[in-house]
Length: 345
Length: 261
Image (cartoon, rainbow over all chains, first blue to last red; front, side, top):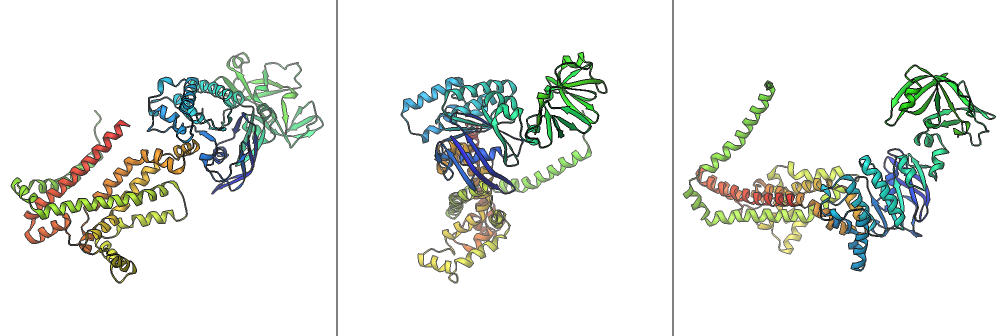
């Protein structure tokens, strides 16, 4: 559906380099990466709003690299909604129909379907300035979809919303994706969003794509230290490998296998690090005694830092576990993790 | 209540001094002529003609600034290119050049010694001592005010609105007429007010290019030179009143529309 073939963009101090990406028809694809990675630039290049210096962009089998934005069949929704402030909700939604000729009843049918699906009926005659963030973003989605685009680009559409609205609109997005033929390409840096919506994703950094694959695969098998760190692999250590063991500073970690693609890193997700008062005798092959150096409140969880012979592990535990284990700064605890929870790269 | 510091009273007294400095001469001038004198002045055909000429030439200058300045302001607001600062400085030049110098400069290209002046001459266009000349001068001095006001108006419209419009199928021109213009017209109106206000007050440059036909400031000067303060005051009162009334009407129109949208 979308093929991005060796695209290069120079923007003064910032470059996009050698972007290759292939997205299937009607896929929900996620683009992740830290601020300044070039996600929005890539989105705007697909929309035709930024000129490509080298490479090709193909949408629906048509090379659109040299086409102006209005000829591409690509709609875009921004984080800040970007509704036209001088037009009512109805005029905002139907804006694109001025440029797409169709019978009146077809236009009305499209409007009714979107208004119904996004629950906008009571807002049609209002101006965008009087609406809440969630309402604004629903209008922006309806406006983008009424022209039946081949591709819908979403630039962090949920980031500016309150948590309640965000959850609601996330479900709305999923529904819209199921009911339309459009291919969705969304930028986000919220992993729960990405995991719940997307089939596949790409991680970008410094103007380059670092990894492309199934959501789960990126999460569980990051191919580089950057991706691991980015997706929340808090326990990321340099290691040297000996057979099925890895040495991290003075610490010996049992991998249960020989690392297949070792570049000298191991990573363990903090939620896979189990804390206990006494040494656990279980299937977990790695168990160490350490000292708690830091406890930080992260809302639903506490992040506990434990120093084991100079190596600091991070573990996520619940508030009740924190009390049960009597964990505080300076206390002693055991930490354990399965060898299968260790990622090597 | 918290006691105000001396610095607060310094700021207040400076403010009062400035208010008095601006308002006192104006009020004195406005109240000096008697009603009968004002009535007599407005029945003077020369006065009416000159005030009308002032309004009409300043309005034409603003119209020219609107037609040519709007695209340039859009370009400056939306693009970055090498030499943009130079262009912006050139646009500001008429603000800093002394007014008589503007008149001299315009005459230098309008005279027969210059190829441009020769072309004008062959086309039958006269700059020196003509309404055309007055409009040229007023456009020259008023243009920067229009371009700067409209440029900042365009800059305050997020480019993303235009991006969205394009992605929904509108061409560049369609986007400008449906999105950019409706959102920027108020700044254009302000630009027109600023430009014509500047133009209507011009004296130094006009008096060099066209003493006749007489615009209001030149007539004012002539009355002052010929008959003294007492006879120039009523003309001044009428000129100021007409200008203020016009600007007030425009201002009210813009504010009313601002509320409705």
